[in-house]
Length: 245
Figure (cartoon, rainbow, N blue to C red):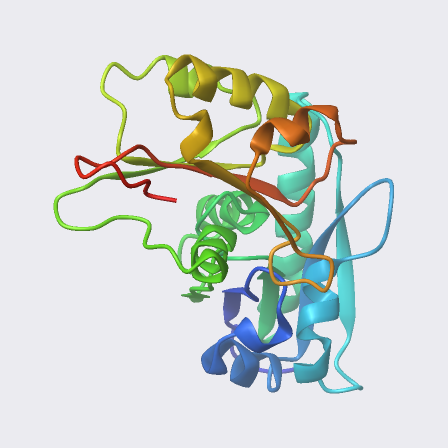
């Protein structure tokens, strides 16, 4: 058993392309004692683990933390606390631990809930969070299109409830990114159509993975089976008549 408390590293492994993991994240993965990753209660596969695996030594334990896919707050909060306690147990024994997540750990990430719970349960626990490349950054790069320029504004929003949040905006930013579009693509495309932004919007599925696809006509997504790794980047026509995406 080690003498001092270990460090918790929360790190993003990028959107999917194994080459888009940062040097710092790779270095930390190579030296921590334990790697944790989130998985649903329905399956054990973790894309984050498959991306990070080349940087994790063979003898380093990898432990999956199962999270229920539910909107029941009592159930999700119980999972956050149970998993936070599991991680704290290892940290208290002096082990350095990494919790890995897709994209960036501070952007719509399970790590954020674990972090807040640990900060509540153990306020003095050393934590280092390491940023990662997000899916919308990678998508903009694969489109060769700037997200914002000059004095323009960018909104990153969840598509988990469709396009309702976008509809509620009295002033809409020049560029809007919908993450977690998944099952709600049809309502998102309807909201964009209402705002006359449909033709200036692009969908990207499985960004950074071999099956990556760019969908220029996002209405095509309405009739497809839901794809978990779907984002939509919605621009607007500029004064010179060109489109932002």
